[in-house]
Length: 394
Image: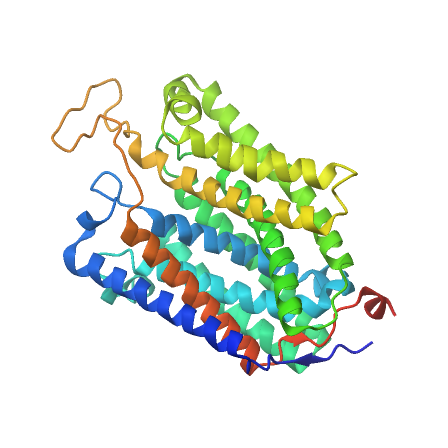
């Protein structure tokens, strides 16, 4: 059966109020960015030892959500899951906008955001930062072309671009993981970080789509088969197992190496971030959602699936936090077997706490992404008029 798509009407007072709130939050985020730019990073929780704060955490979080959304978008064309075809356009649009949000987070974190084009004009293929600049910009272009092909309803072209999109999504998130994993520094260096990033991207992207699809169809009052939620929840359950496996192996690797045991203990049990790890990632992000999605009494409950999806989205955000922050607060081994002392506290464990301005900036960028997404749904025919698995099967 041919799928009919239609834009959002967006004429209700609730829609305009929602958009007005998003504009207000986006404006507050831009003002926070102006204060951080004009007064310097000392107004945030960052320092010369912790130059990457919440903005970088959100950047890699958005990149993961983007990659996961794009893979789900390609499932119908590439993996034969025709029942997911109604959501391919939504997921592709979201994937493109989430990467834009990631780039905004990175650019607004720079000391000189006006030099945004410099990384694209001067390439250094020995630098993961330079390589990722190419991957990110090309990724956005691929998402745009992919959307155009779906609008043109060219099935063969959609399949070909979907293959390129999935390969590029894997490359984008592998490159992001390599930024941390290839750095010879305790709590960063790990050959498992690129595939670990991909696993968390797939799980968080799936969890986000579970929640977003229900909200969109409920708001627009369009028919929606709840079986879609159950189908996506089965994928989410598998992805959570993969995430748990990578987390276990990666930290076992750290604890096994003699030179890393002290930092591994600090990371897992002794440091202030261990609470984020055990409660945020392991407890809320993996164990509780896993129990919900594998227990017969709850795995088919839509409400409990939504709880699992919400908790896992939060858990992956905690995972991104503990990847970025502890590796900076823990001292780097600049000179092996020697004590380093300086006024910059090079040999000490330093603290970091998220500042109010960083939170406002992060919310502002999220609001910009949401604004662009809602406008895209209103202007273009992205959302199907109905989503029923029976129709897709016929």
